Every structure is written in C-alpha cells, then in structure tokens.
Figure (cartoon, rainbow, N blue to C red):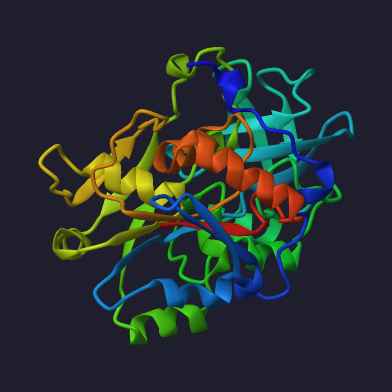
Length: 342
C-alpha cells in the first residue's frame, strides 16, 4: 500500500491558527458509514447523536508546556521541544531547532538563571538534555514553558506564555500530565456538553494515553507497511475496564482513545486494565475490536491519523468527506473543526 495514495490537497488558508471563540461552537461533519452520507452540523448539537446506554471514551492526559526557548553562549536563540523523561525528572529527550551547530557540551541558558547541557545525541533529530534548575522542574516549566503547538500553527518566537494557547490547547477534562501534543478531538468539549451527555444517560469513561510528538508527523516511508509508530504510554483503570466491558455502543474521542482501546483489547474482546505501551499502527485493512463510532479532527495528509480514519470509515468515503470539508471551508488540523463518524 503506497503512502502517496493517502495524499490530499489542502489550501493553506484552511489550516486553523486559533481555536473557535467557544469550544463547542466548532463545525461538525457527521459521516454515516452505513449510508455513505455526510451531514454538516455544529459540535454543540452532538448530544442529539447519543442515546441512553451509550459509552463515550475520552483521553484525560494533560499537555505539559513542553516548548522552551533558550539562549546559546553565542547569543543565538534555540527552541527546545521536550519529548520524554530520560531516567530522571531533569533529564529529557528533546528536539532542538536549529540544531545544525549543536554539539555535545553545548550550554543553553534561560531567563530565570536555569540552564541545560546537551549530554548526548540520540539520533539525527533527537538529543538528551540535562536541566539545571533551582527547585522543582515542573515549576521551571510553568515559568518558562509554552504550549507545544504543532509547526503548522504559527506563533512569534520568544519566551513567555501565550495564555490563549495554554488554556485552549488542553481539554476541559485533562488531569494527568504527560502529553507533548494535545488529543485534539477532545478540545471541542465544554463542561456544558459533558453535562448534557450525562443527563442523556451516556456513560463517560476516562482512559489515558500520553500523546507523543510523532503522532502528528507525516509518514515518510514509500510503503505504508514500512512505517513504525513511536511508542506511547497508556493506562486503563480497573473501574474503566469494567465499564468498557459492560458498554454497548462505544464512541471514542480521538485517535488516541481508539489506540488505547484497540491496544488493550484482546482477540476475545476483553479490554484489560493496567499500564502499557503501544506502537499500534492502524491503517486500511485493520479490523476494529472495540470502537463503534469516532469523534476526530481533520488530519494531515499521509499521517498515521488520516490512515486510521480511512481504516475506520473507508478510504473512498473519507476522501469524499474531506473534499466536502474543503469546499465548505471547514477549518483543519489541531484547532480546526471535527467529524463524528457513526
């Protein structure tokens, strides 16, 4: 299966640079797999598509302020994106930009007197940094970190926090810190929508998957089957596992919730509780074991997220839906509009 077959053309003007004014006022496309139809609605109408006894699965991972800007000894600014802790709270695997003149031993300083030292090169793009901060590393991040927005959302470089992004690049139900990218399908939910669903008799179940940066990157291999997903940590509590076992119709919020459920569910259909790691790559031909419906944003061409959606709804129907989204001026990607696939 060729990666190029999952390309589509998108006008740059449709890439959302800011969230909608109100979380639940984004547009929503309802795609019916059985009928092959597309309906244009708004997210605040989503409760109409749920019935008593339905189960909604959400990812409660919280995005950390993983983007930092420091200064090298030359005076040049360097951008740091934290990826994963590497053995201790102050040692991290990171991406650096620009990295052309970075060497082991390069020192990076921050406005509050903290610093970091390049300790190791892990690959062409990844480095290990040791941070030297006064006190707790999380406090250092609060002071200096910014929301780890994907590169297609443009912001001015420099230190300090963007308050809008810190609030809106985070779901209202985010609890457990660990993601370096948002589970973006959940950004549309407001407290009011969640309350409305609960009053309707919908069981809202939380699982956790800490989203890694690699999730949103385009696939670079010529053949789909040659792509390898980066591992991400997930957890399902015993209580959540029990509720999922009793569920009738399951709607997953985002591809992250899908990957948790499908990774933790065996061939016999039982979803196990516990902590685990997954590099599950879902592309057309995959047989879904647990998920019946999906809430998802509009994804980058040739990305693992786009392929998952094509696997769930069928490539032809998704191509039709995306063409309609472009023609109707839907907003794309992380801060964009969404799709409910039923």
